[in-house]
Image (tube, rainbow, N blue to C red):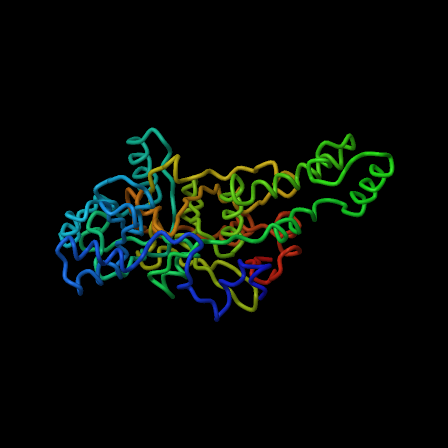
Length: 394
């Protein structure tokens, strides 16, 4: 794998060092230990705090950040960012306000959801899982730990991988290169015809030596293609970053976003089905309530940290079907907020009933349409350096 050309694929290499230094180093171990010791903790406890994900940023010496939720923000919220003098509170009993209920029927589940929604102006988001997963760290944050249950983990695929292999990794996530994204999106065009028109325009005296020149062309095809190139080049790391991370996530590739949904029915599907991959083919097997372990998470909407999937102009010619059909809402994350969706977790509903499975296979094809119905999927598999990494449900 050529790191300088295809940095994204390094995450799939067995040789990749998940502890490599990020491009912008915010957290320093020695500096963090120094702050903890100055707050009165011995070396052993200071190390335990560091290993559990409590860190300090140089210049923010008066703030301790829980890197699972806090973010690189210079303010207190008293639960994920607090003063060094408050560190002792981390050793208190769990005090999360997340509620847990059991639904004994589909009707009761919908009633519970309606009741929770009535308490909020903004819509409640959902995530369905076969069971609860928990953050395994020596010192859990009591503000997010449910008594007798644990500290719920809602990590993205990227941070799940990073945390498993290097718990104190603070990597900067690198998406696919502009070259690879361009190969995906340019497949929607007749490039030979684009080039023919390009050369004809130059022969006719048009000045056309940049993307902007092409975008300003009188030829509508060249103008459209030029604007598309500009959108990709200017937006990849900015306004398109969330969209691109969403696409990676929904097509089975490592991503820093976690997919939620605005549809309870979609959440129910993922709560009652287990993902299986065999010989490069993916499917979901119906497992019902998983012996009562299946859960639906109710998550409060955050306009700052969550985004409803919409087709940006750059997606118009290759509209991705998976996020659309799964009513996708994504939650962002970062190296200093790797479990951010759990910050907004309001309630957990355990499924204590079985759901009729007669439409299971139909739903798989509905939520994961084949290449002939999902043009983006076809383009992605055609344009990627490693197309076999994409989940294939055909």
